Length: 224
Image (cartoon, rainbow, N blue to C red; front, top):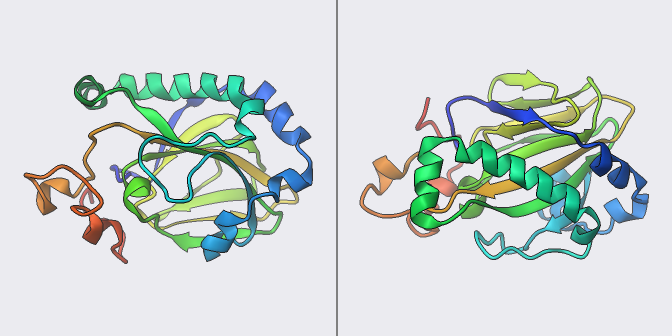
């Protein structure tokens, strides 16, 4: 989702229980699903565990994966925090009154190897461009940095941050530790993309209406 800025901090979370469970996973667990690194070359240095995920990148009715159950109590608490964050926004609240409550459409754990990088890219397809991408570091290091647009920062452990995935973004893990993030894609039903007013003001967002902007090769500049 495009917004004014590169990063938005949501809040610090208590991830003690989640972190303990995640770090107890065997290495094979994080290598058990290779869809992300095989499908997207920029993620070649990552491994992932899909918790709530569909390969068709649908925008509703997400599928819980087998690994979800082990982390369900911790994830539900995090979802409650994210929900409260967006409920505090008047525009998001009005949209939900009209269209239904917000919901997570994807949740995954991703591990970036020591010395690894995620090359600069911009997220595309309808669901990725119409969701709020929230990162929560589970294990990280000051030398693991995230760049969005022209801004590079370190995201501390346990803090929830939304990133502007409609700008070019990249990650460098120059640390000796694997960088493990929980990524949650949050949907506000009926929320238009930033270019809806200029591209299709009389039509709700849909894969067909938004195709030209969703798959554009240049970063969205509607809010710049």
